[in-house]
Length: 297
Image (cartoon, rainbow, N blue to C red; front, side, top):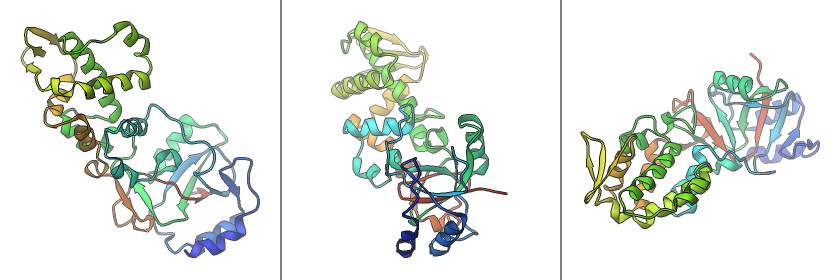
């Protein structure tokens, strides 16, 4: 690639931040000139970052992985680890824990800077050094507009993998009330405040008892789940997820389908083609080195 040779000039000057290599404005300009996929007329990609430097190279592969356990990416990872998702599909997308998460919406980056970062942060224009990015269908991976197929599949508006997670906990409670499974309530209560531990138990119980779910009937007017003589009052959207489960042969098949990135609208594309794909107001990510230049109007 064209940028590889010219990149040698930036190997010195490593910042204390292991992911950053400080460079001068002149060096940044020369690097941009060397990138065949860069154009000043391209849709810009932005990121808020706690720095006041004018420009630097950022390498997301170095240092610790990003840790945000409450995000949709966490749930995707948990489902994948448990074999509930066709890992080959998601593995074709860059690992978000080792990626630079950006946006094509300047205002969104600015809001993030103002609400989440310190006063010593800045908005940067970001250019990946490789012509490849991954694009959300919405402006945030963790928000419902990125998961429309999921919402449509289970007939619940504004759904995310996190919402799906809370529903599985509710379903397990309902299965217990109907006498289909036995749950150690004391043990369950001790983990109910821990998203990871509670959900792991829920998923395991549903997976192991998936065939029982098809035997549950739903009394819609009275919002009750029925199994034999047992009835359980439903206050949320549990029954909709149960109805969804009943369309599939296994929990693995269901989760793989409703969280499929392609069906939900996630795309892999060239950075140079963001303009062609109407990629305004989208979250993008990539795990290659990138150039970050402080943005000025």
